[in-house]
Length: 281
Image (tube, rainbow, N blue to C red; front, side, top):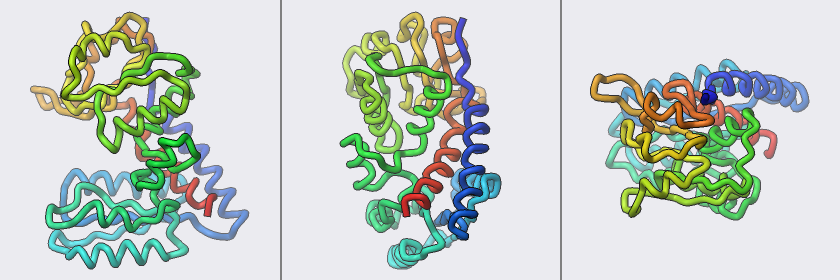
């Protein structure tokens, strides 16, 4: 019988703790904690994410500053705004909502966010520190996965972990966090040979490949811990993950659902990182 890893419940508990610590910080320093969110253009999915981030800020007592720029905003105007926010003492965290319109140089804009305010954990400095096992602001989604494992007292030490997907946002930082926690880690991707065999060796399988129900029952060993980072739509338009949940769940010891698994943790970890950033400054 499997145990469902309830990210929604873990997220709610963690947000409660973050709110307490935000209140303590405000009392101790007399200052607010501020998160600036920059959105360029009118991407509907991005607009929903930004609204959810602002709502989460209100919930935990973090002040949000939202900047909505037109689709045709120039590179220099976006860069100038990010540079101003980097200097602004009221702003502890800066988040540039991705994707940006195609005419903008994403890498250049993100590079202007100081590492201490890089609450997404994407900067070269924070990524490098993560690789070296140095305390840093880690990417929100994989860090959220680690918090779920921690909450359910799943010790990854010595376990064989397989991460399917090598993106800079999830796959690579996920592998580093697991490695830093003493797991033995394999990263698989679209060019991996014998993917099924690699997955079947996993004590912990993290699916972050972006393909609906890609991970099938025959790819999972009995008793595996399965973490589904995917957020897709199936052939009926229903929300689903990268894992074929209904056919896999009974082989697992633990599994995350979609929705309600890893998803709720991402914005919560953004709040966590913003608090960390304020405390470090």
